[in-house]
Image (cartoon, rainbow, N blue to C red; front, side, top):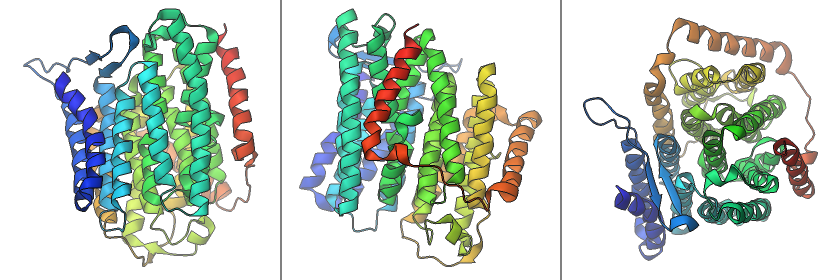
Length: 482
């Protein structure tokens, strides 16, 4: 199993460079990488023996106590499977497009570095993986080579590198204390080490106000790149936070606080947003909060969110306008509307789609003080996606030939993922989400449909983003010092 794991990690990088030698096979090689990751992830969930035992987590120590430490378990499996399905869907979406071998090569290099970040369990190898992710994401964002895309890509790269600089200093402080880069080294590490590492991960993951770089980047990128960024890339900063919460009990309350605050902040912006892609980007911020609010079940929620958010970004790219006010007067294609409604139902927590089970499981694992905030976030989600569900239909649209294979894969996976928590389907569990959705729709029609309120974007401006990081660092010091 160890040999297979190392080969699986190396495969995307090997084929990424092979694409340059065999450009005519670019999409086939890229698709093969996505399918290989899906197969690897699925075997992590297969029970063995007559007692149906859960597979034992695999831990690899590649460089002794200096790092590199890799951990592969079911939690990792959810994130790897998300990466595999989203990457496969994006490749199918671009199949008949004019994308060059460079695009496919960078896509699978990004895919491989995201997988590497998911399995890393030490700070230095995670740092390397996150830096490679930053470079690959930069190249994909800048792929159109327009002035706008290059500016957005440089903005992303600058924010990412500054965050990683903070993170690296924190990792060095952990090593000075324990002579190890392992996650468990945070237990007795200096306060400043914890604050610096968390700041880097919060920025990379798009958490709370540190994530206000995210809406512009995700909304201004090309449609398939937006799907990759929101579906999987931001989760490379979230999974290490989840692991730290599970390893160290004293960090669990801090992670949960950021989860609730992120869920509420993101949905507050999304409710008043009139641009479809910006609304989806703010909802990415909010949904990441759901993952952190209940770390022990965050893997399932990450899978569901990655599938639905990627589908929503692909669908949004086929709408006749990005302006929700204009869309209320422009009927959209019935087929696109059906796909949009199904994805919106899932993220709102409607039964029959895995978003329902993920929300129920998350709500059952909240602490009492989290319940009010997370219910507000769930209500806000229903209000936000009512904007999509009640759009007029019956129009015509030019749909890319790869659109339906990609969307069918993602939405089909949302139905199949119900098997993870089929116990959610009880009368009591069904009533509450339906009541929340109904209340959200009612609030949308009575209050928010005609709202003209615009929340300020000052914190999203480039010259304020580093200042926001500094404020977050002060907040983290204050939280962890006790």
